[in-house]
Length: 396
Image 1 (tube, rainbow, N blue to C red):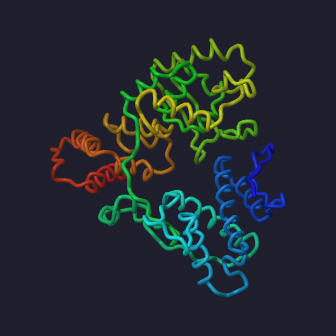
Image 2 (cartoon, rainbow, N blue to C red):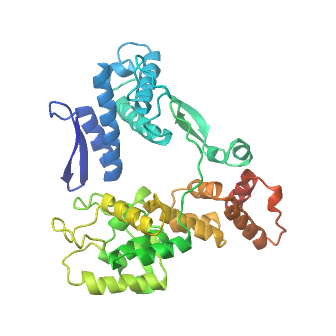
Image 3 (cartoon, rainbow, N blue to C red):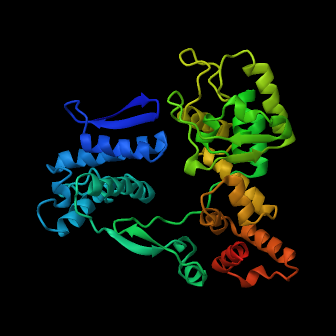
């Protein structure tokens, strides 16, 4: 079983081949549907890879995508039983009742990864409900959209919108947001060995760009760089499949004078002699020289740069988070941060407040009180109260 893709003028279509090298048509139709709905090629690729795991499990168990959910059996318990078994297999693919290790089994995938895979499978069946008339699986329950702030806070927030959540969803342990500080960013900038890499680091921290947005930058998007302005533009470009603008969040970002000068020099010194429309290109490869960089290449570069700077496990998104926390520490409210990062909703931004370290939350709270000319007493507030006040500040 293998994930393949073909490039079309409307974008890249990913599909799944079975062991006989034939396309699995339900998955192919689902991928076409995702493409028509405007999902990025990265998202489609990820869904195809997740569905590959599901079809591998089906093959191992002797089921097919119909029998696994009880099509024709009129037995709803089959759905929960089989999909629960699939979820268990995702976590413990080596499990055997005949061989139990002394220290027990260790989950091979984290809860967040299992949830992503299960979400892809359930989305697939949601599509099949309309495509083939498969009966609704009834595996969802209502939950509040603000549940990431804890029970107390979610009860206090005035907007209590509800959403559907899969009953198969794993509980993901809460963790503190991972980000780089401004001093770490400055160190990374100095450690970068070439101008293009410095610009990539700068775009993600100062501009808050996602990797896919860095990859998708065209020279035309830098036309106002002398005014520190960069345009985030969505394009359907089969030759640049890793480029995407999440949630169609096009807009304008601003960078520092120093980074703007670096970018301007890069355009003149490096790109002016290259026949390309792309801004971030491979400069040293023999096989794809002057072609757009790939996501894996940038992630690998950032990771290696992090090791040079003494930051283990550095990931590009930590730079984007770094901008959010830096703005938070300097007194920006959630609406300002949301607009800068082009988040789809303020709740996404609010999660940054909820997961930031205590001194950062307290500094943000002090800024809130200073603006309101009120006295601030952080010792008397718990995390939920801090975030609640910040949320209410944007809802008024």
